[in-house]
Image 1 (cartoon, rainbow, N blue to C red):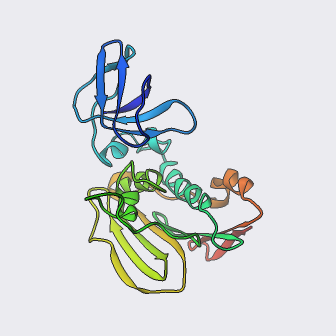
Image 2: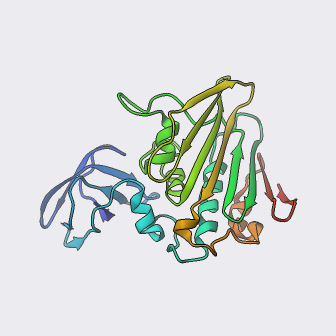
Length: 253
């Protein structure tokens, strides 16, 4: 069950918790913080509707289907809103700019390959590839496929939800890893490609034309789309934007 509620009791971020409401005690399965507020995204194991504090909570959805059913809750635009592809790109760029630099300068490269295909690469430490917990998938796999996917999770999974294919190339601790995914399931298991002296992550998304519609496209003005992110770029961050549709770099800071 998915919705925003204000909880009275909370036990553990990202794990199980219980909330007391006027309609009785409701035990919920997963929670994710929404910013610094007391609002959380709630996922319960039951279906239908319940009330918390007299407020109805939305009907149950599971996995990335929740994003596809209500993208405005996650990406800020409805499925028929022409801004949705741009919002998806914006989310991935924002995530990359939050990486912890390994070098003195965090380099983030944005490449728009076509109207519905883009990649975002950073030279941070790379997505984690160790298991996220006992009997769980690697962190990188969960980050792309679960809304509670740990470090760098949720945001990346939201964009996987509106994509027909997602590929992550990860360079970490001397090894090159690759993970495929789509909105319905992870692809093949996280694969070791080989050794490397690089570090960082490249995320390539092919937004789903069957979901977004034949006329959907990333905006022509990518710099304008990312204006507020460009304004927040720190001195030790270099952001490069290239739109292959134009054949030239747009911005370099």
